[in-house]
Length: 259
Ligand SMILES: [Zn+2]
Image (tube, rainbow, N blue to C red; front, side, top):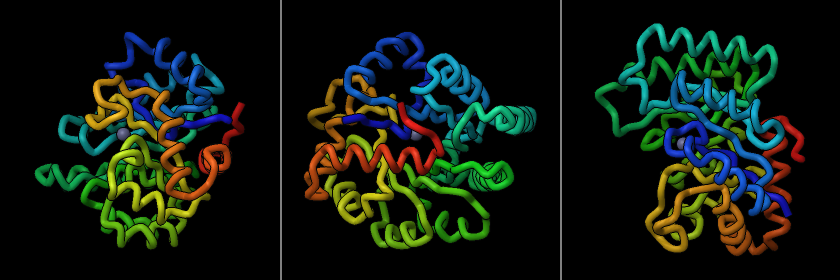
């Protein structure tokens, strides 16, 4: 059996001291591929480095997260777009992410919308898949997506409204879920209702979880087998068949071949 983590922030400060350990834990848990999602220019550059250093295991996603747009300067935005364009020529990353809109930060809504639009447009231009953060904005984002010609869309940690899930699936989105699959009724419902060929696994580390069995633990890809077990139970399938299908989904979504 092999597992994947489609959404982790390996470039985050919290992982820099222990990156070797984290990747060793991934290996020991049979997590064979991880997508290092970025937040800004600095983490995009770091994700690229990690993908280079751990080729075949770590893949990079580059982009600007809605949480970082408040301190984003025009120069940094420009440099990020340049980096994305340059690096796309040698195919050193696999997606644009993490990008999106967050309703918690309405004070910077205009800037969030502008940056999100630029990120979607560059994904469209470079024909790259996107990884989207949609807290409180899922319905709105689903309305926007058809006006871009995107290759593939991953709604990471899709939580609500559940009524938007069928539309997301209908327009071709993939859904990735992590630790809450084990303990959150809302997320369990999402997993139940997502077709198995659109489902991916993630950890969103270093985000921490305070419910068992994850309480007090550093979030690492080692969580993924537990998440797959929970998905298997919800889907009434064996963990092996869920792991195989999710690995295939990962290959289809990111256009890579797993080792
Ligand atoms: Zn994230």
